[in-house]
Length: 613
Picture 1 (cartoon, rainbow, N blue to C red):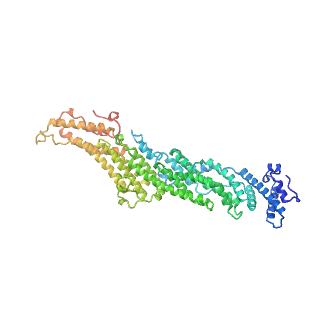
Picture 2 (spheres, rainbow, N blue to C red; picture 1 turned 120 degrees about the vertical axis):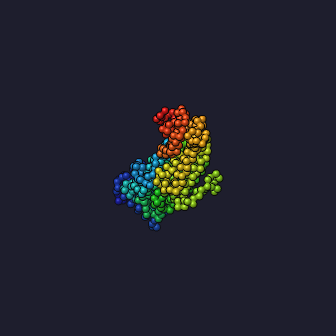
């Protein structure tokens, strides 16, 4: 179509590009052709727009002008759509995801992460109790993933607008939008813009892995699948808010700012992103109102932290009145996530109190519940900044607790500590209370004391191993726990060795008052036999018992030897000459070697101790 001559009217120029009247006009696009042609057409539209508002037009002229306007607006709408489609491609999300995932950043939260596998050092009791799995599954298997997630959340910490269209295309779109809005085709322009750009945003969403799931769909997902989707959402939300939505807002301003009497740029922006934004926030909302299982706590906190981190950017991107319905969702979801986190702490406390397993762990070693609870607490301490702001009330204890069997606790000695720290102390108290109950299922009191010693010692070591946890728990309570496990060790020794040492007393061995000549050989033979039988039983039995901590094991052996060896050496010295060597089964060295067999968790025959006989 050749450029019109000077004798062609504006209406004729418009009509020549009428797709309903000209087959050629339907094939070609004005803005893909010669720029002079574009200029000529826009001038024609301007001229007709001015004439429509003229009072000097006759009815026939006014009718023709309005018809030309309708044709021009239909044409410009097609041109507008074509420019948008031809130049719109989804944002390249892969580099953005990499910049989020790979940017290293050390944070106080991740610095204390310890690789403490729940199965480590469990000896023969590596299998988890199902009831424990219910309160701890998925909580301790993704610490590294959580650390990466948090580091990635903090790496893209500013809005990064991108140029979504070439400058010349933006200029053409603005020229078209200006005329459509001036002609009263505001709604048509917004709808065309929104429909095209919305499909582009949807494409970016798919690349980011943001799925269209209803709240019901999300709440029906298994936790393992949901756990993965939360991590993906955290990464995607950063890109969506700080790049995708921010760039769409910038494009809307470039094309529509200051056109017309209303904020067209804000309207177009919301036409484009409202549905995707609601889709994004619906996921977080569904998580916030889902069942409050303790294993979800740390992902809930990751979600809370990422959303809190995004809040200023959400306020910036959705700062207009049309965007208010989207903007208010974030603080509402944050509030629900905070409440969910508080509820999950409470649920965990109740689960620790009520964990019902009754089968004693073999050898009195560390109970799986102890490992999981302490790992859970360690993770809580990693989130102390967030949880310190969310946990604002003290634990409910004793008769005020929802479970009447809960122990009472006086926090008078912990006035200086935060509510979160008090909850950690309360969880440990509940764990001890539960372990005390489990210890009663051992038929041997000595083994029950060993069980308590092992478990409370493990609690102490976990606290000492984390600077954050130790700071929160405090040295006063740590000293209390240390006294408890040392008392359990003392109780174990008394229950075990009082019978052995009783055999080494002098009472009952003298038939007369004379120490040298009045030894009853029959009583002495019976005494040595008793000692041998009792010690053999202790040796055989307690070699099967297990103290997994090497240092504690050695300390207890040394303590036993310090009491047993001097007493046995003295007894032998006093009475060896009064009885046949056949009744003396153990030398002092044998006794020392036998004690070294104890608490390894294996039968004596499996050892390779050096024995002198």
